[in-house]
Amino acid sequence: GAGVSQSPRYKVAKRGQDVALRCDPISGHVSLFWYQQALGQGPEFLTYFQNEAQLDKSGLPSDRFFAERPEGSVSTLKIQRTQQEDSAVYLCASSPTWYGRPRDIQYFGAGTRLSVL
Amino acid sequence: SQQGEEDPQALSIQEGENATMNCSYKTSINNLQWYRQNSGRGLVHLILIRSNEREKHSGRLRVTLDTSKKSSSLLITASRAADTASYFCATGGLTGGGNKLTFGTGTQLKVEL
Image 1 (cartoon, rainbow over the protein chains, first blue to last red):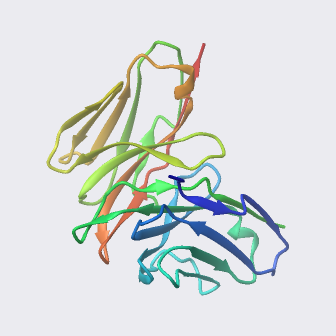
Image 2: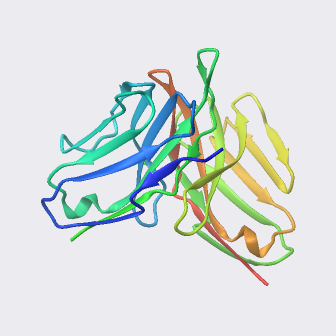
């Protein structure tokens, strides 16, 4: 089966533009996570979905960021009015849930590298 | 914010040598995991150790966990050029039912032929 797929792989945006980043998780994975990775740093948590429910959005840096997963599979991270500080790699990860407890291992996509000019 | 720090930040060794990376974290944890990231790629899970475990092995990998010191180490034995990558520790905690990972700052490992 396919792994986590993210698109586009690279995105260049002019400051002030809106962008949408897509994540296709592994089929059947209930949990989906978004992380932001700045250059030379470890990933930082943005938000978490269980099926279509966004259960944790504590890591979203501002109200310009929002994410959705309307049918419990594909997710989109949208950034409005992009700023230079939004430049980073955005990683999506999914994990299965088993008997109501989340599996601990996350499977990551290759990421979308966003450059805001 | 990052959970903790890893050291060294960068490590360069010869093929066949062992590589040891250390990770410190700040809060109580449910589990600690190590991930590898090749340049321009996503992260790949290597090994998980739970808070009630002290040591775990997987192939050429050995992980230790000391919850009293809030630290962990990853040992890669008999390193290969293909092990060249960045290595991150990540601590897991339940949040709203999920297992949000909090990553360290990473160690860049270079294995030279």
